[in-house]
Image (tube, rainbow over all chains, first blue to last red):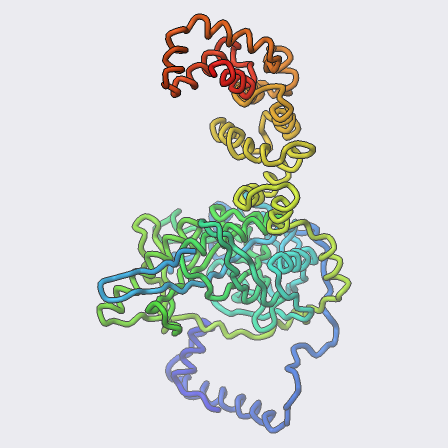
Length: 95
Length: 485
């Protein structure tokens, strides 16, 4: 499996990462190196083996339904580039 | 059910529709954090560092949300999967601070199920459920506060959702409408979601395609997002189906796309084309190990399940003698069904049902009252019916008594006693009224005996009037017939 420049551009767009045109080739090579390395795992026979989701065998522990957090809007908004009336403010996004 | 077929000059068309419904889970705290789910609090007050997507914060699954999901799955007659997993659905949007939604993808908590819907013509149809999974809600974006900015409130971010996906089993707008009403009824009985579509706690995506009637192909479908009332869902299906037909009949093709239904124009317009569709790049959520449920946990929930609308309906028909229609109307809402059962206890259930669905609901409508605020209690409604069935008052007097009950909240026995409304069943007294009438209305008596039998009603009316409405109409009828010969 190998990716081309278009795929790299697309992944960058989906991840909202800026990849300069002169870096495309280099990034593509890096992607392909990783993919090739992972592909080696394909040599292992995994017939009848269920996918492994988690390496620790623990099952999920559940939390009781109590309100234990909140009412920290000032702290929540602290890192916001812009805020007004208690809201996060972002450039207009209407799809 | 009468089939829903759209007939044009060229062809007969059938509609294929499936629904995806997002239902907000009723719980105190959010699905992965300890912030409150309270609706309408101050902006960004019910937000924890987890909900705000702060680095290093870890989600912890709320037991109650799992509980509610299993309950709902059982209510949908669905398979509960003892093993399920959480996944990340990746996309960027301003009201999704993590940059991904924690949801379930390959292994949902609830598998296939089935829900019976009641159609307007009295028939039922089974709608198959494909799956139901749990996930977190996004925050709220407000676009109309400024021309250049959007405002984000994260209070809703992280509230638990159940997404119910049906098979493409709907063949008409009526069927989809009936399903949404049934689903809402089931959720409210279970107490797992309040089902208010206008407040957004239940939101519906509608998938529509069409095909020539009788064919078994599936053509390209379009999805309409966030249609927010039962009526709009029905209108959206109709208008979208007509659009598809028009395109096909003009030699065009339908592109798979997401559209938005505009209730004002009752048409749909494109939101985004498939080529720009999100590539969600799902992968297993590394912060949450798989959810493994024990039989014990599931069985305990099963044992606590309330009687659901279908079971209640069947019982009302079988044990209380209601018609299927009456039972369906009464059972749609749990509060109504409970009120009815209380009112009918020890009395003529069919009569109680008639009163409840007739004068009683009319009174609530007129006074714009909710059932819980009714001035007439369930016990008093039952007592009123008892007064009729035991011949203490007649049906006409009962309406007057009911009107007083609606004003004063008084019990009917007391009203009847105080106002002297007990009906006269004493044949002697009624006979006397009849004799007086026949003696004074000799013309009409002669006319009746001469063949104008239509006058009988007039005689009954006169006697009732003389008795101030208190005579037992049946006794009056019988005696009049005898005396007029």
